[in-house]
Length: 380
Image (tube, rainbow, N blue to C red; front, side, top):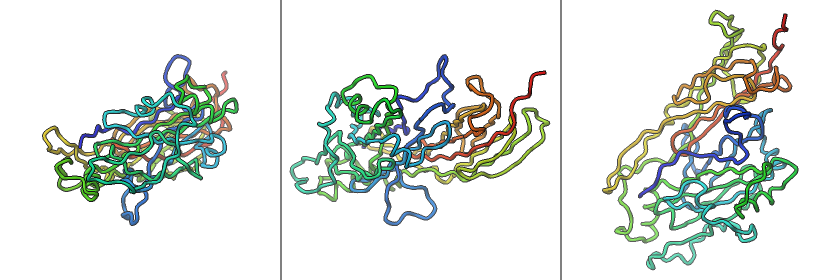
């Protein structure tokens, strides 16, 4: 099976980018999506692995966005009530990248986008050689817009390497509605600054399991690609083992150590203005999976996943915005950076976010906060 391997992507029209007068990319200055995690239901999940990030037809995937602002992560209640998101599913062809499906479908009136139907095997006759198809794009109906569930349909495009493009549409200001943002997207108009668009690949597979499924439904073996042996496990989300914080009174190498502690997600520490915070985030190395990649001659090669991490702060200065090792190391200085507009963080509370990805679709995250005491020394 021919499938382009694409790292999980997150595209937000309203997200700040690097440039003159704009904050650096690691600075959280407004409502901003940092990741979407796919978690697939399993009847009996293994005890010591991450949640499954790759879905087979007729299984249910939960979409969990990680959206933050300068004061912390948005709760599911805030996402539902303030952003009022709607979600679209669109079937990606193997040669399409993210946004390729919607870009090919627009312009569309929102009323022309049907609700995503439940999987239906009725009328599917493999002897005809015609594989089933589903509406694309379609609107995911959900009672929980902050973390919707989507049951993967049976579509012939998945058997030849297709995936699902999932798009969240929302609004971040009172000057525009989600319905208006959706209309702008589907009619291919320039987005309003108050609109928020997040696009995520929902991987359908593993490919070998799709081939087995096609065989079960009677698709002739000579019409299908060969199976790898052994069949690899589905992609799973990575996990974070520990976040260790060591704090020092200032930036000098001889500075007094103020604390060393392992923090949990959401913890709040208290440190003085000007402190140097040494950070270590340990990813769970056993979560790095091996997977197969098909070659041009029906052969397969194996690859090992890798980790990549991104750091974000609401105030202060980071030594680096990215990491590429299971043990991610960074330094956060509790002094304003060149683009910070205040000498101390708003409400004296600064937040650090860390997003860890593997090089397929797996992702996880953590965050903690520091209450900054005091302020810059007075000028003599």
